[in-house]
Image (cartoon, rainbow, N blue to C red; front, side, top):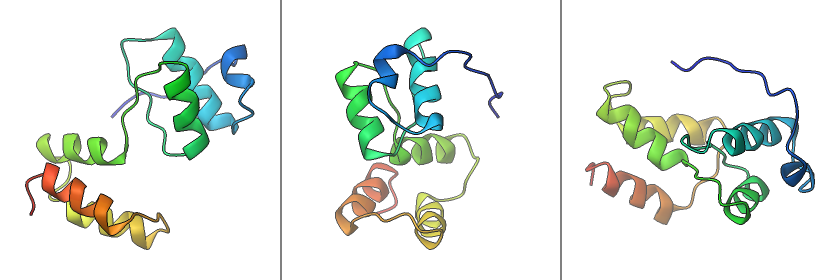
Amino acid sequence: MGEKVSVPVISPRVAAWDLGIGESEVLSFAIEHPELRAMVGDKAACRCAKTLKIKTLGTGGMLEIAKRRGLIKSVAGALDNLQTAGLWLSDDLVNLFLKEAGEI
C-alpha cells in the first residue's frame, strides 16, 4: 500500500479550479512529483489535470493493475462493488474495463 503524505500548500494553478480539498491535494502533489500519476475520478478534477498536463490513472487502469498484481481476483467483482457503493459507470465503460482486463 501507499503511504499517506501531507500537502502543505495547494498549487495556485490547482486552487484556481476551486476543486475539493482532496482533489486539490492530489493534483498539487502530482505537480510536485511529475514522475507519478494522480488518481482522480471527479470530472472537474480530470479536466484540471488534463489542462495542467498532469498524468492521471483512472478507475479502470487502477483495477487492471490491482488484478495483475494479485490484489483483486477480478475487475468485474471490483466494478460490482464500486457500483453497489454508488459509483455510476455506463455499460460501455464497464465493458471497456472488462475487455482491457481480459474478462470478456
